Image 1 (cartoon, each protein chain N blue to C red):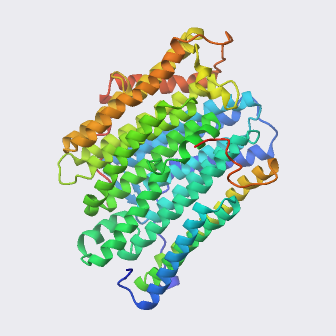
Image 2: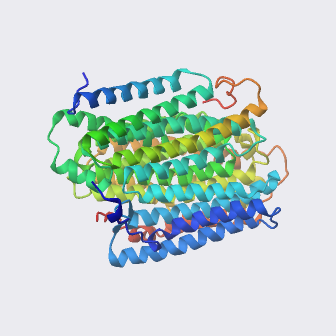
Length: 503
Length: 106
């Protein structure tokens, strides 16, 4: 028995978790100062959130250099991992928070409800995302997941004037809570078999001790339920039914936030759990991931074609992107192959590039949709956009081409990476499905482009693009094009990504 | 046939937890009142708590019992957020079942 008087708490490396603490401090400042003072002028809420994010990005880059020289390590008695995987995805999350805050500021000013809560929720959900990304313990991961999700439910329901927003919030809440319970039951079963929730220890235990066949069934059910929990969050078919409704009902900038931050966090956590904790059972989960990936690709790409609302189209497109990401995870499950590491790198590169892309796309949709009603985001709203405003039309076209995976955009680098990794380990069937679905999905983006460039606009009135939105969309565009022309920029820094923290 | 390599007493608790979890799951799937669905999610979380306590006792490991406190805090936070959303919807509509919320077609 532990004696309370001799108890020594774990050592906490404050500097290593400083990006997380910065975001939390920013959220508290916004909430407290925001509620104690009268309305702040000149978009100061968004600028405060942006500055907080900028500081957190700076600290993350400092930690990146530290990890590159000193190697990855575990923090706080093994609860969190500090490695390049965690830091790169953290930086992507924080950049997304910064860009989305800017877009939201213009959106809320137009709706005449620019209040600090939304930005505070962005920052708290980013804290949850950072915890999830770095978690080396299933319970820490669960806490991060809930911090992220609870903020996202509120963000989805944040437009109080719009009943569709509240409906989206409630649907997301019920199904998200349902998924979290499944995840947690999976953790409980895994804990029952192995006696630990630490990812690194799980691998040790599963490799050495277990030889009881009856326990293996419970363990596999546990792993399966963890996968179901993740599948809901990442919106894999057949657990995708909430995605179109929530994406359509939520305020447009928030949808961009969910599609970027929510996706990075869930995907990176999923990859870390399965690659670090369960490589010994990769034959079992690899097959399940293969099936999920194929289904997600086909359903996401095909159903997107019949949609008439642009947010629903983008929701199905995000489902199909999740399928592509899983192609990389499936490649990572072939651990006997020397190329299994490529799959891990491809997944992370894909999700990071997709986040920048999707923030830009939803930025343009926010600007083009004149108000928050459902009609404002129908495909008709984009009719003749490129004739009216060639520059805005061109920017949207670049984003759509990148989502379709055109060469010279970041989308090509991402898609090439996952398919190449699948071919390298010999998963030819999945690579073929992925390529066919890329073609089907391209049709969806083409439909939007045709509507923008060839149709005539019903009203000659131009939409205004405010300054902060300009900056955010410009940065997303720059990332998309620069990585498209110089893929080595991201491929060089991710080459050592497979060195995950283990002690 | 469920059989665990644990003492019979613990098995009973684990089966009870599994049954509670199943009732919760079924409730979310078949009930149409958001408040009842929400209670079913709480039932699922508490079924998991029961499993954690039982397993921690069997494994003679304190971590499983501390996990339960974290889960309870998360469940409480979920109540705050969930009721907030439900109340804000109730303000706009008198009667509420999930069938009434069909503006967004899935």
